[in-house]
Length: 470
RNA sequence: GGCGACGUAGCCAAGUGGCAAGGCAGAGGUCUGCAAAACCUCCAUCCCCAGUUCGAUUCUGGGCGUCGCCUCCA
Figure 1 (spheres, protein in one colour):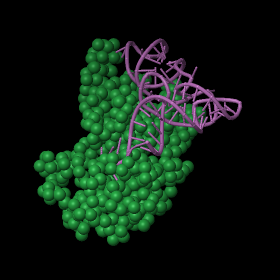
Figure 2 (cartoon, rainbow, N blue to C red; figure 1 turned 90 degrees about the vertical axis):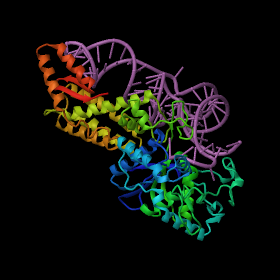
Figure 3 (cartoon, chains in turn purple, red; figure 1 turned 30 degrees about the vertical axis):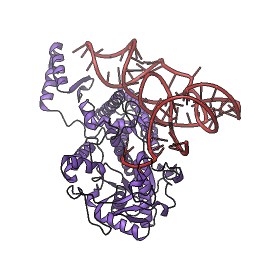
Figure 4 (cartoon, rainbow, N blue to C red; figure 1 turned 60 degrees about the vertical axis):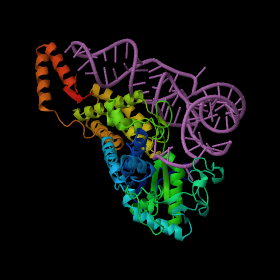
């Protein structure tokens, strides 16, 4: 089986081959911690998690680096208004980011480098770029000279001539050779020292531009050529294009072999969710509205392929939460099943088919939605088999393996149900006694009491089952 | 203006040159003390028009619509 990933660089699904056999180095653009991450940011971060998990499933030893941008114009503005240093300003948002990632069950990255902790690496790279004529100093600022990098635009397939010059910047505000030259270093402004946002450098005191951090930090942790670089589509231009220019101009080596870009999450009106546009939804908002973070995870990851736009809606979130519930219920039932010595070759064959199909779907550019569709199909068949006792040891074991397969990506089943609290157990026993005595009034009353505590009871042939419910 | 993507059921969506996955919602059943869960059944002429083809939802062209990027952005 071969893993194929859609590579923006070639605009095709390429077979993934790492530089070093068995190892994969992945750099992913993390959050700018100027605010809470919104659901669209989280989608991108979960896509990184999916890539990383599937690489692991495929047998790679993955080094995953995700940067934290803890200095940029927005942070500077906000810190100034709040009258604190950027370090102080950013702190709660960094904490919130890790909380969110934990709640969403994203595997922690290997490294979370912060821009402000890697200034020397950036200064070094900028120095190199100035020395080899790819960058120049202009009135204390340092710019990358795009004219010196002929393949600029190759990633986003943008023709430089077609760019609408000066659309968003006042061309006369800067001393640039060309309007599209971008800043590597910004001269310190009067307030910067007070904000803790200025560093000394051979080319003058100041702070780094946005793009240089990724080039410098990825090199520090993963070397000059990355196996995979991932980010949201909106970073493709100019951010990733600039990273390529900086890194390749400084290192004289290909920067990244695979570029993966995840599509946007749209809001209910169908428009891209963005912080600057105002209306955006955070994980906290969703939790407050009663959505389980794990259901949010499933929604963001499994309801649509990562390269298609996905629209956030209450109905879609509810659907995701039902899907999670069904898969958990299914896994729980398989675990509890006590199969006999039964010939279940047909079921076994189907499980084999679905496991292979699931793997194939994921190998085909991480098509988790398709894989999940297969899983649901099989869950129905397997539930029917269990309903009628047509499941044997081997079928049960194969189902457990399948559950492990999909949970390696979804991570919605494991570490569930910590064990019956004694009080719950006592109430269930009391209710069972009442039912035996045909005191259904008391039995229903107990079930209601437990429901109020968030415990749902289900009477089945194998006894009473319980689960957490909202 | 330049570049690009998308349009599949009430909703979210996968997919293929040959009878259109899956989930949610809905309807009807089976099971159950009642429920729940599970299972069964039902629920789509794939935006429109041409063309290529034995055959098009899939390929080509045109149209309509929605959205993204074009130096804040995941």
